[in-house]
Image (cartoon, rainbow, N blue to C red; front, side):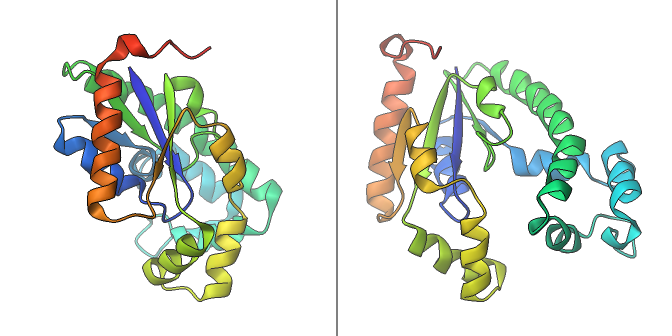
Length: 204
């Protein structure tokens, strides 16, 4: 069984994945795969530079992620073009990673992806687990983590899928506006349920 883990920016997806990993559950992060496919020498990087110009490349030839983010953030068509270049490649590589993880024999595996719904990666999983926190916490964490001001952090949060829509599409939810013990208890309960796979009918 593959569990898709998603949530808004700074919701704590990696923290939750590590909590499952402590219980022996392997995971692949779509963000890591997204970085892999735009590494120097990869076809996606050449296509990005061809379409968006060499200003999105750093002096060493790697992708200047900040420059690209600023370019596509306020331009819907540019963002869609970037997705057309990257999403199929990300999905292909994710499928390969997931197959390798499943071969390890764990009762289930995790696909951690901030764009699980937006990219259609939810079609690759059996259940969708949303990590949820109030937007005020997202803004505070984003500003601190990404070294941006509050207005920028709010804009980043606002540009993502609305919290209500994510929750409506969730099969399971973890409330990560809690302490470490509260998070651990929620992970333990879901781990128990996921291991008891017969209690979960497959998604249709």
